[in-house]
Structure formats: C-alpha cells, structure tokens
Image (cartoon, rainbow, N blue to C red; front, top):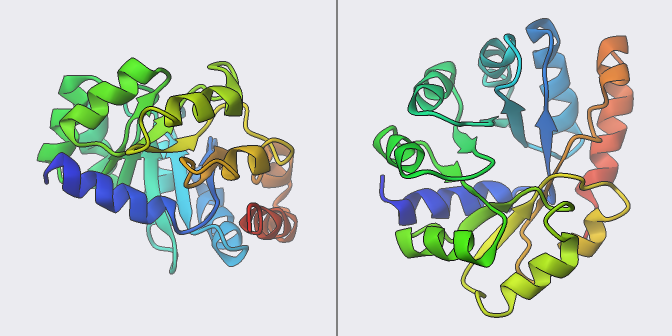
Length: 213
C-alpha cells in the first residue's frame, strides 16, 4: 500500500463520524458491548489504544461487531503494527511518526493516522504522501489556534486533533477547515464501562455524533 492510498483510506475512516472514540480497554470481556453501544450511537470508527494487556483481545472482539471499523492506537513499533493487523485492526494511529513505523504500516497494508505536532512534522509526512494526520497532543500543542495557524500555509493536510479534546472544545476544532474529526475518550468513561452502562455510553456517543453538524 502506498502512503497516498493509506492516507485516502484513513481519511475515509475519519469522515465516518465527527468523533473517533479513544478507548483504553482494561477487560476484553467488555469490548463487544462497548463497541456495540458506540456504533449504535453513531460512532463506527473506534481506536483501541495498545496500552493495556487486554488491548489486542479487545480489538479481536470489536472486529466482530457489525458496522464497526476498529483500529489500533499507540502504535510505536513494527511489532505493534503486525500484532494489531493480526488482531483484526483495520487502521492504525500513532502519537508521532518514524520511518520504521511508516514502512511497517505500508508493508502490512494498514492505513495509518500518523501523529504530528508542528508544521515541520506535518510537512515531513506530507512529503511522504500522508495528507490525513493526527494533531497530537492537541491542547498541549496549542489547541485549535495552533491547528488553524498550521493549516494556513499547509492546506493540503487535514487532521484529527486528539489529546485534551472535550465536548466543550470539540466544536471549536470541528469548525476548522483542516479538521475532519476529533479523537476523544469522554464517550466511554471508565466508570460507565465498569458499571456496564451501555445505554449511557450509547447516549454519549449519539450526542458526540452530532457535534459539528
């Protein structure tokens, strides 16, 4: 897969909904119900971060849910890419980007949303062919004002800002012409997941699905 093809697929996934849930799954037994609730609420693209021992099993469970498009977040190494692909991930997300990681994703035919936090990083990825990128850490890197400023001289690149995005500031990001969607964890709070409050999570997802529209 070429970077251009990968970036086109990543863009299509990002356009499915205004919010991509960023999920830290502690117990894979909750993954199916969690994915079902989020998809039912209108958020089909799901990022499961590889930060817990349960993450790969969670991806396997979520990959079975009709209507869901499950990806793996926090990809750091080629080994992460292969493990995510084997588990059923349909896309990957990384906090930054290295040549080894980009090579691995391209070799594995795994569309990647690579992270950038500056104009230089965005330009390096654009030079390689990645026009859809993750702006991370969004709030710490200057928030919507910084992303707007980056977009002025680099309009070819669109972003999914992630990191500190909330229901309050998400509409500000989504109003920017270079923002396709945002990544956020608020749609699946740990207390609701632990309580099995799937109806509550579906309601949060439904609200999030209407942001920016």
